[in-house]
Length: 254
Image (cartoon, rainbow, N blue to C red; front, top):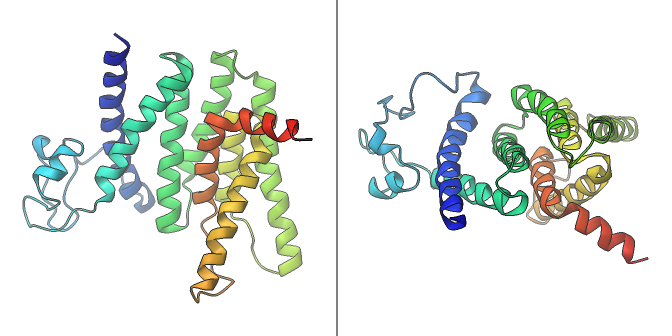
């Protein structure tokens, strides 16, 4: 029975991953994620239901549009697979409970934000702001995290990045932190609580610094903009699963 439940979670996650591809493509362009139905961006041909089966259709079509033959990026099945894998991971971590549902929704929002910020250097308010409310709602629906802890997490998350951005602006005379990053960190704090705000920022800063150094070593300018949200979101996913263990390990090392 447990294996059957995980299989159902995986199939559900694949479908959500397919929808995330639509969100990532349309939301930054100001298009509806509901209508019209999926279509080829090149020839505008509507995608038939049998051509829209996660992963399988991409393989059957040999990564090309059935109408015009335009290539279909490998990112599509990767995102679909990520949706399925994260659904199983959420169920394994939180059980088949309301906690798993909230955690999975959070993970999918983080996935969409990572890809959108990486592609467009923006974090849509249409994701971050509603999910601040969703994080607060999780704290009410589950005893895992109290409402006060969630609210403090949102304030600390958004406030910390706002302060870092202001310090950078004063020191470097340039914009250091976008408003989208601030709202994203408020969303992360609402879901994870104030205790995990610092680990998320530290992990994201470390990963972003490594990436920035790699750009410099590759000949890119040291002032090249880095999509920090693309590092904050994965760091939040890591802390959702292992944040408390990381904090306990760190505190226990003293």
